[in-house]
Length: 316
Ligand SMILES: [Zn+2]
Image 1 (spheres, rainbow, N blue to C red):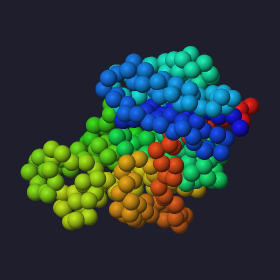
Image 2: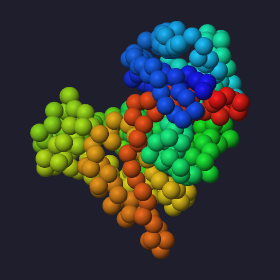
Image 3: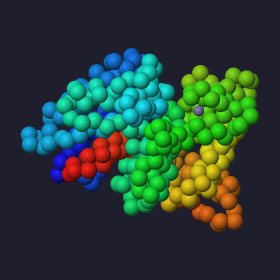
């Protein structure tokens, strides 16, 4: 079985691994992205990580392609990336840089689209044809698999679920330049920031506005803290509304949630199921399946490699 190298360029970490045609990963490794250092330094670290994995593989294991998962926006035709959560990136020709450095054909894919494909082939949605994927972390990433194929749209920047407008009038500013997007409410960063703002405005809370994370908000909400409960319940309402809309539009087999915020477990999935059920078209009697992602920290690497393998129909 031939192997494909998967690379995942994230805002907080870089990951790489060799992936076979069943989605099994070997030699998985990750390093901090230190994204503040800018694109040249990040790419140097990525190539060093890739080289360490390729050098360590048994002689005779051919690596025929490399897939790169990266945050959007991307220009898939040109192979360039301008990720919102990586400072200083603007039309970085990452596909050409990686292909030249490693000497194998390279393919570039939106990280959440790659993750959606990986979950649909090998993870929580294995065997299903229509899957909605959201990652709730620094931002809110989105990916769609429709009829078994990743949905990219006209420019490769489709499925930006994080930028569905959930507050159309006077919403919070978003990293994309817009306002009122789901990401401005339901990313881990936004959950923490919203709670901090309420506390700084004078609300009484057990939370420390100067050092709080989304996890702190979830735990304080469960413990009865009024500020945390308000912020968390609003998060669930808006996330539920966005997912209900997607369910009504796409009628998917499954909705898969990944990213750090899913560490909240039942405190997320329990109320979210109720919030989605409250908004899907009642007449259809839909009971959407909403589940945690199954592939863990390697999901982007598996997705990137799977995209590259699909593009090289002969590989494997
Ligand atoms: Zn946005």
